[in-house]
Length: 270
Ligand SMILES: Nc1ncnc2c1ncn2[C@@H]1O[C@H](COP(=O)(O)OP(=O)(O)OP(=O)(O)O)[C@@H](O)[C@H]1O
Ligand SMILES: [Mg+2]
Image (spheres, rainbow, N blue to C red):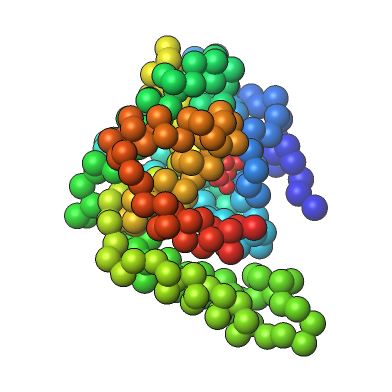
């Protein structure tokens, strides 16, 4: 059982030192993942966000070390939270960062004008994809992506899907078949990795920040298109997908490639 919400007294020393004098109302801001997310406020200093994760849960979700690596690499490149500290204690990881101002892309203040919202959402993605990938240490190229997925199979993460009498080979074959349908040549850019509306911040109607970067790294551009279209469909309506691609500057996205990457995501995250 988790002992949440974490009060400053229940935090490991290095984290507690960082939030001394701060208060949290204990409200968990997490969206769908297995991380817990708390806001710590201070009358004089920048507000902080504490993200915690039990590494034994949902191994197919990124851990906070991956998010820390991404966050620190991105510090002067994109508008992301300022990194404050990362700590591991037993099975728990702790990541402390500054709170970005504004509201997320699912707030009624911004969803009220979907045309403007998808234009900003597309502009944000262009900014991400325009990063120079030369020195990027986070790798989500296909070779690593599928190695990671195979490791998840080998680690038993999807064993509950194996029919009675079956083996993990069935899962490996399913994944291999999806992989075989992807074009061999990758369209490599810097990808956010979970580019959805709850993971972007808006201020005065403009997209001003990116959060939740545990899956960020060098990968195929379509990785971000899968999350972007999924969130648009879910939070705004399917009719806003085309305006999004238009604003991104891609009139005719490759539907087949997108469908195949969607199948990969469904395999891993369903
Ligand atoms: N640095 C931040 N600045 C402002 N708001 C934040 C920040 N970090 C998190 N939040 C708020 O908390 C919510 C959840 O945080 P986050 O997106 O990092 O985690 P998650 O989606 O629950 O977990 P996961 O990382 O596993 O996807 C965000 O949608 C946002 O509302
Ligand atoms: Mg999120």
